[in-house]
Amino acid sequence: MSMVSDEQLAGELSGDVSSYERWLQSENIPVYRGYSVEDLSRVNLGPWARKGGKGCFINLIGGEQSTDSYVCEIAPGGSLKPQKHLFEEFVLILQGRGATTIWNEGGPKQTFEWQEGSLFAIPLNASYQHFNGQGDKPVRYLGSTNAPLTINLYHNIDFIFNNSYVFKDRFSGEEGYFSTRGKLYSVANQTVRSWESNLIPDVRDFKLFELKVRGGGGSSVIFEMANGTMAAHISEFPVGGYKKAHRHGPGANIIIAGGQGYSLMWPEGGQRVHVPWQEGSFFVPPGRWFHQHFNTGSEPARYVALKFSGSRKYSMGRTSMSTESLYNAGDQIEYEVEDPEIGALFEKEMAAKGFQVKMPYAVKKQS
Ligand SMILES: [Fe+2]
Image (tube, rainbow, N blue to C red):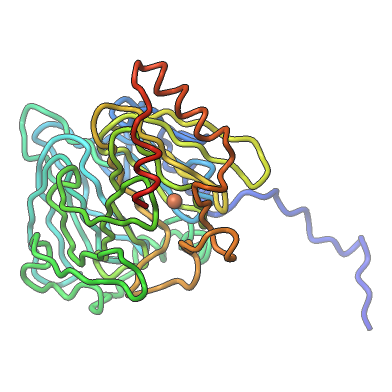
């Protein structure tokens, strides 16, 4: 048996800074941290050399280096530089309208148009370029990606951004790939509906389906996009309603598409983090923290979730949640066993706005 002595030390290893974190710093744009961002339309952006526009990263605690997000701005009448990368990405248009040209290396190009509220996904490692369609207004969009996963895994930036492999099983240049047509699926053993499409024209008015199991009189639809492992869904719940608390893994990026209210997020047995929100707010519940959404506004509340996993076609295993209650080894807290402080706080928040709580108990009974 050979022994290693201190004299043989080759040096000291640096601290716990990931390859992704080093790359993030090298991009040299503002970085937002913490639990939430109040308003995506008001974040500070800096010149972003790689994109050819302005941007900031939103790398919140709840991403836990599974997913990240960024906001990027395209100047009036301008375009960004072409991009290609070995991580998945959702794009949600926050402001403006324009078009994206997309192609596989050596293949034909195709272009599709989008507007405020549009959601689409970039097929893995496809080349693309975004264009602002208006000469007098900037475009602002949110990108949510699984870059932390792939950059940390391969820790080779050249491999991630200059890789020539074409994933034809995800996108082979077929015409109409970004049409708004789609296919509707049911999901085994669940009442949720899944819409397979690569372009959602407007998340703010997209048709949803009643989903009783999550409570609060809510409705929902999930998406399969660009043959990716990341998944998206829209959820809406009515005036005076709140959803059941639940928990799952990290990396679910939540963007409020309409309405007003707040969310609570807490680790089991720990303190609750209170996140107030309105249209344009953004937050990410930390992994395995319970979280619960409350509508205190005068219109239905709707959010978009862009998640690390959850695709039913390309499952990453049981990284999402179970809709079974906690008492059935699941991840959901049923209304009848939730902490009474939850309902009391909701009544207080509603009273502060001059609203009477009429709905929740009726809504609870419906669920
Ligand atoms: Fe969730």
